[in-house]
Image (cartoon, rainbow, N blue to C red; front, top):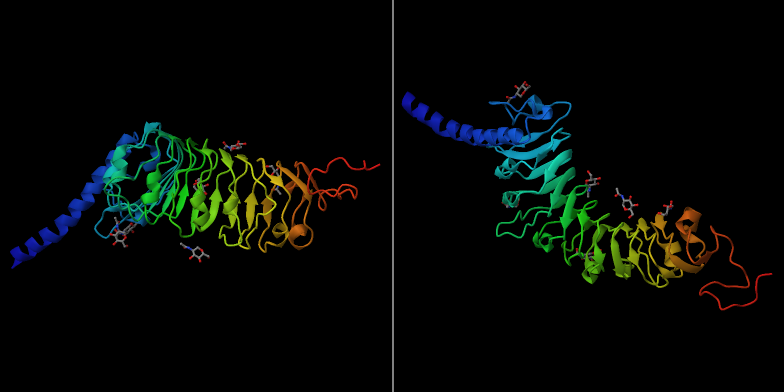
Length: 346
Ligand SMILES: *[C@@H]1O[C@H](CO)[C@@H](O)[C@H](O)[C@H]1NC(C)=O
Ligand SMILES: *[C@@H]1O[C@H](CO)[C@@H](O)[C@H](O)[C@H]1NC(C)=O
Ligand SMILES: *[C@@H]1O[C@H](CO)[C@@H](O)[C@H](O)[C@H]1NC(C)=O
Ligand SMILES: *[C@@H]1O[C@H](CO)[C@@H](O)[C@H](O)[C@H]1NC(C)=O
Ligand SMILES: *[C@@H]1O[C@H](CO)[C@@H](O)[C@H](O)[C@H]1NC(C)=O
Ligand SMILES: *[C@@H]1O[C@H](CO)[C@@H](O)[C@H](O)[C@H]1NC(C)=O
């Protein structure tokens, strides 16, 4: 009798102890690979890493566990280290959430074993010095439930792997403030409401036309070297609330663009946009934060509707815009096109 109880105990409890121990060894390995940073001082042999209330510290790097004691989420932040990426992280294979935040001394590439983390749902690595290629999830086993990836503010270089497009549930992808080059691959995201942010890289070429069919909520490519005509991102049917295209080489005629009633803000400043400002600019119901400055627009601004919301800086530094809130248009030169010299205004 007591032997059976003992055997049952041995079976149920040693298995959970074993899996717990697996990740304990891994966590201690990660700590060692990071050269024992002060922020992880409570990671010691035998520590109860699944107990959140025991693990709270002011500089909290957090762990949560699955019911079997495997690490389910890991946050490493504000650590004072100068080390490469700890490949121990690749062994936390049950992990669905990984956040690495403000570890500026973390350098070098993300090791290829990283793609073994196929249970990942949310991944955020920001404010580090990690460099090399962004992880490519094109392997046979993919983190197929990955919905959110934020790799902004690191030093990743090379091109954007088209394999992001093979992650069926990916809806938010932020690769801003890196050193990425090349063109934007088509179909990076599926067509449900999504966020794509690629600001401040060195991307070139045109925005793929297929993005006109994605129901974006937010689309941000400001601060690159993109060109062409991305006006298909606008239009009455479009769902985006914010579109940021500033500081590129986009060149197109704005005259017939329609702004949707979903649009809350857009920034087209510092491009080569020409033509006049269409009437839908004044009637788009939710438009509060547009910016058309530093382009080549010309002609009389539409009046009424939203126009009272916008100050002159929204329209500054264009070819020849006029009308409230800019200076009144001169009667002798109605503005739509750079008028062939008519009567001088004196
Ligand atoms: C978790 O840690 C707290 C604080 O140290 C302790 O009071 C509590 O008993 C622990 N819970 C478990 C389940 O071990
Ligand atoms: C993805 O999520 C589904 C539903 O929650 C789950 O059954 C499946 O095991 C998950 N797949 C992976 C690779 O985590
Ligand atoms: C990505 O992380 C950066 C820095 O932590 C943050 O500013 C940005 O809002 C995040 N992006 C998304 C889509 O959450
Ligand atoms: C995109 O949005 C439109 C309009 O809101 C909707 O009719 C369409 O079904 C959406 N498409 C997808 C793939 O979500
Ligand atoms: C982002 O790009 C803009 C314009 O290209 C530049 O003025 C700005 O300094 C950049 N910001 C960072 C943080 O690199
Ligand atoms: C529009 O963009 C210009 C140039 O980036 C900036 O100086 C100005 O403050 C912006 N205006 C508004 C209202 O955002």
